[in-house]
Length: 458
Image (tube, rainbow, N blue to C red; front, side, top):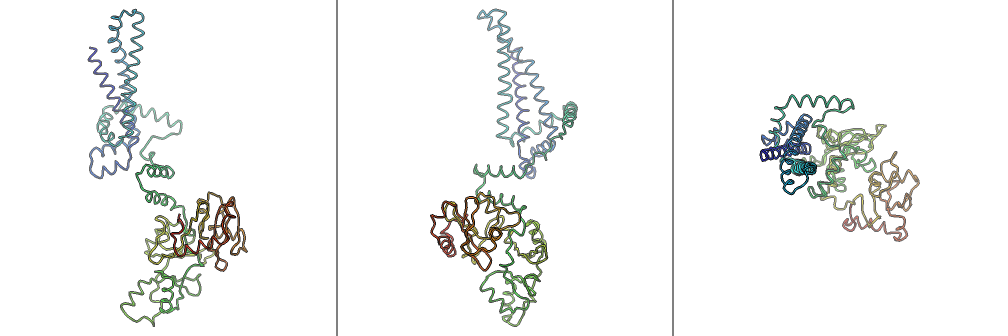
């Protein structure tokens, strides 16, 4: 009889392990992985999908199973172990009064150890490490158990819901397992640290998270830097501009940059030139294509969708007064995710951030205040302005080349201007300013124009 009871106890502990492992596995398993297996036709995955989409019910089933097996182990276990140990204690002449106490204590300790370690702790660890495999293996048996004991589960689950609703809680569902953006950032960061994704993938994912927070004004080519052509210009004028600028698309104006009527694509004109051989007498009018006009505060995600829908690669941004504030191309938007895209004509392009040495940078004045704050770990005020150059002019509207502003522990020196437009700023820690020769910043900038490899690009 004792042997039969021991077998029953072993079976109950095995069932406890099954329910514990199933409970932890279905909570931890990734829904996206199960969806992938469902698409591949995995039958166990179909059952698993049913469980994780009705998580509250099947967690209740697991809890009921654990409770039933625990009660069975407690009912049979202590009495069985007591009956096995009592004769042994009598053989070594332990007093009868002490046999009951000692055997009960040992029985309780042994059963508790087996139940906790074999029935719960070990299965929990296996489920955490092998959540997907255990979910697939346990899905069908768990569904069968749920169907057999459905009335009891329904009553118990309903009673639990009444209590939880008194505290304003809702039943657990698959959607409750969704991750917030901050949680996803942490997951991606941990995946990068563990080597599951590489640095480029880590960078792209983080840039995508920032993508929805950016507006077109932050990435635009400002009005002062727009290269445009007059509607009345000849193709000869266009060829002169192309030789100097080497862009693919140019906005076309009717008077000034506040009246941009469209754009031309150099590829289209070059194709026509190859076909007709003589375009010298033609005007630009026949090659003008529509251009998108949007407010400068439009989110770049919305602008990209609009450009894709209308198949137009250039958008003119308007300020609150209806004037042109800048332009954005599809390439400008894509660069927000993948970083700078440079072609064979960008070899002499100077990066917006050049690291000379630790705490010493040459920065493009168009760099956003938020980027400067992130780079230097400071808090420049960006409530009314967007760029580093704008911050300097706001602080000193009479700023000239060579002027220095200080903020926190950094100095900001204007090292290149074009008319009233600040182009480049040298930034360094205050304690390092006196160590650097007066013209070091200008010298670094000139060298970078020839070869960016002499400065570390960040």
